[in-house]
Image 1 (cartoon, rainbow, N blue to C red):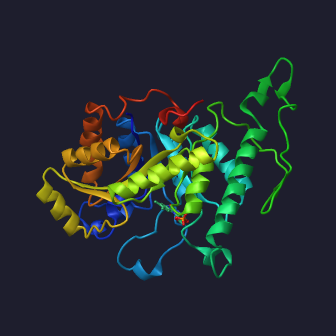
Image 2: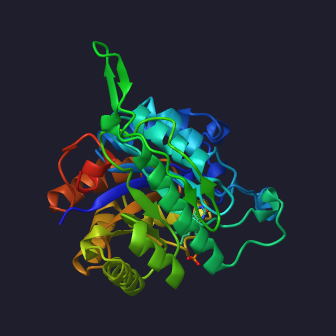
Length: 363
Ligand SMILES: Cc1cc2nc3c(=O)[nH]c(=O)nc-3n(C[C@H](O)[C@H](O)[C@H](O)COP(=O)(O)O)c2cc1C
């Protein structure tokens, strides 16, 4: 079995009290430098993708003590890294509750072009932040997912409205684009009215892979109909197995193959050469890990935990969230990933150039 492996591009190594370490380089957290370095290391380890969450608002209650949701904007950061990397996939998070599909479709199509087919999109229905969009309350779950379904449908129609093959650029005949293949979409939905077409062609690599995060029955049904992969928060193995099964059933209910959707839970990793050191690191950094599956231990402990969940049918891969200190990133990429390779759980090097290829999706 080949796992799909991403790594979070948010500064997970500064979480809770870890930013206070002498070597945390917290002063650089709003510059490109630490993320460019993480991207380079992750690409050397041939990971599938960089995954950038996005909260879009700040929790005032905790900002005095820890960064919380204070981060660079997800899309902007990923777009900057498209220029500093060549192989690794790039997955920003963009919410569908307050955004508008036309600029989102355009931004992602542009990212797909400038990255040479390495872009993806983590579709979320927003954690919060309604106060920043003139609303007193967030819309209810059913409404958010109905809008998300329409949003994704219109974005994909816009991507298809100017297909890659329509960009001809034939100097001899003077044909720039095959106008018969570029079409308006004239979309009239419940939430959006958009004529189109998209103002740039699709990339020949094909449609951007869609990730999704949301765990309610509506979220799972939505993922079943559109997502290629799902980011989850499942601390316990049994919960992970149940969510993976529910997602596979939702894909089948939506007329897709069960294997067309991959479950990739978050994996907190606080790593050190010995278990004792890892425990000390977790304690010193006040790392608190209730939300996600967690390993506090050695690289071998992490590889064992990953192998056990894969063998139990609980995961198709994971998104690494290294914490405690930057050392956890180094140990994950330099030691855990090679151990997974030795155990036949991860491919050797890149076998393609696009995110679709890294994820094993049909072209
Ligand atoms: C593991 C996980 C990660 C999430 N990451 C984000 C995120 O980065 N940004 C965001 O706005 N919402 C994020 N969400 C929130 C979801 O988009 C969604 O609003 C929330 O989970 C409620 O939907 P649900 O009831 O289907 O779970 C995340 C949710 C989960 C479960």
